Image (cartoon, rainbow, N blue to C red; front, side, top):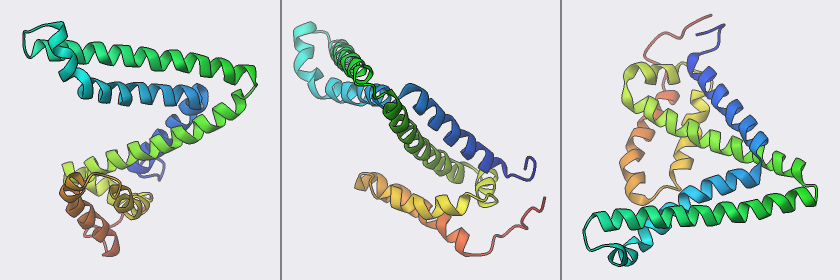
Length: 183
């Protein structure tokens, strides 16, 4: 604990603050362009590299890697060029404030997702990190929301992490096995 605040709560708070502020600074359009350039470009590279690879070289698997890189770079470039036009339009119609507000909300949403991922690893890696989550004020909130967030995962992933999350949630409905810390 630092100043009576559990370490886990400080980390979660700093992550949410950072992602929200960063989202507000960058804006909604920039974040969408950044995220989509990664996701869409990676998807396109995996999807179309088998058909492009033979046209680049006959030496496998290098032709596939080269095709993936080329497709990724071209898709990413196209997305960022489209973003430049969107950014200019946002400035022209004077929607910068709205763009920053929506950017803050998207940043907060990304921060929440990051906190879910961090919490999942914290509860599965060691008893020490799990104890930090269990002793925190935000742990019960995450325990209540994490099973709902897992529903959006593909079934094979959901089945493998579901038991761990169920056990984690049960620990909040039972009294903790260790004495709570008092500031």
